[in-house]
Amino acid sequence: MKIVDDFQELPMENPLTFHRYHGLGNDYLVCHHSVAAQLTNQQIQRICDRHYGIGSDGLLVDGDDGDIPTLRIINPDGSEAEKSGNGLRIYARYLFDCGRVAHTPFKVNTLGGQVSCLVEEGAHQVVVDMGEARFNPAALPALVEGTEALALPLMLGGKSWQATLVSMGNPHCVIRVEKLDLEQVRQLGGQVETLPLFPRRTNVQFVEVVDRNNINIGIWERGAGYTLASGSSSCAAASAMYKLGLVDEQVTVHMPGGQLTITLNKDFQVRMRGPVQKVATIQLDNDCFFDMHS
Image 1: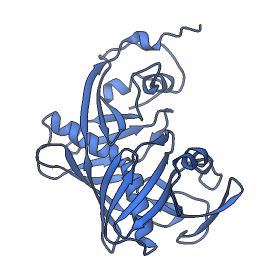
Image 2 (image 1 turned 30 degrees about the vertical axis):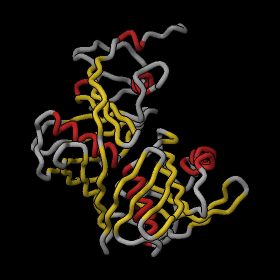
Image 3 (image 1 turned 90 degrees about the vertical axis):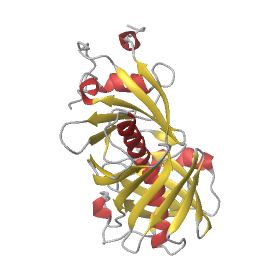
Image 4 (image 1 turned 90 degrees about the horizontal axis):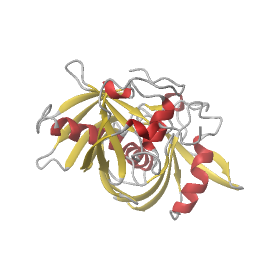
């Protein structure tokens, strides 16, 4: 799949069909790679716009060639993400709905590595083995010396914060707070995302530890902004708190959109379990891309 950067009129050889799902309010549009290949970055931005398009936290592009399904994740700004936990759960449910997988474990390839998925009976709960949480800054990447950054000092809004850097196949900056303030997440998330020490930008989580089995998090996603929920963010936040010795092996992550269950082992292999719902199948009209201001 090649997504071109310049706005241009492309012949739409395939119907612009999208399948809308959400995982805890984190909503995605799933489409075939033949649909995505026809879209420019500007058209993707229009589709994801909640006023001028369908509205979405991104596109999930189904690459169905080969024995193992391949998922590509496009942010609302047209950039590409390596991995998405909610996106993977949604894509797994989509594959189940299409009859391509059953209630048995199966693999999915992403830019952030291969994962194993399982759609449970009833299809509303999906389990994803997200792989290893890595704490080496080079894995994000982050321009930080050393093999770990567990208490990285950051100056934001005239205040000093401490961050833990985690890679789940995509980059995360986890900031522990005594009390979660979602307005603070909105105000500071974009600043953290674009700090020069993150050459590919980063996802951001503000985390309040409630007890050894529960955390509250607020999320700022790279390329998407403030979101109600995020699977990879939940995995990163739980892994960071586990690394710091503040939580046990099983953690319920509470977000504005709902809850996910994260299970870790001593090797920091991370398993995520959470819900998915299908909302609609939508065929977009080409008139969506007409520029009313030209």
